[in-house]
Image (cartoon, rainbow, N blue to C red; front, side, top):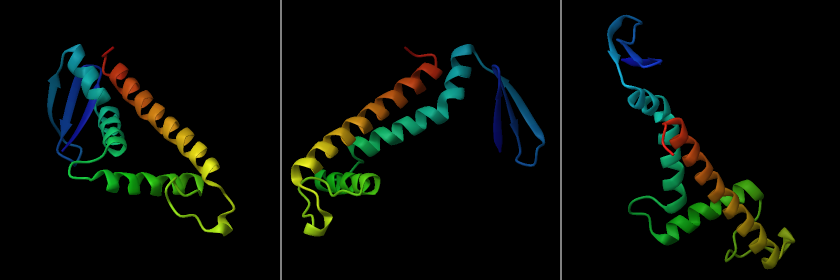
Length: 121
C-alpha cells in the first residue's frame, strides 16, 4: 500500500497502482503528514546525538568518536594517537569541539525546519 499527499487529499493505492481510497484531511493534518519524513529524520538524528535506549555513555562516546574519525580523520580526545598521525591533543580537542558544535547546530536546524514544515512554531 502506498500513500500520496495532494494538497489536503490523501490517496491510497494497493501497491499495484490501483486506487483504494481518498481521504480528506484538515490543513494541520495535511501539513503534519507532509512533514512526517522530515520529522522522522530529525528524531533519528536527535537520538543519534543524545544516545539510544540502553546505550551506555561509553558506547555513545565510542560511536561519536568513530563518526568524528570518519568525518575528520582525527581520533577523538582521549584516544591514543600514534605518533605517525602527527597531531597533538590540543589540535584534536579544538577540532572535536568545533565538530560537536557543528553537529549540534545541524540537529537543531533540521528539527526546527521539520517543525516549521509541519506548521509548528
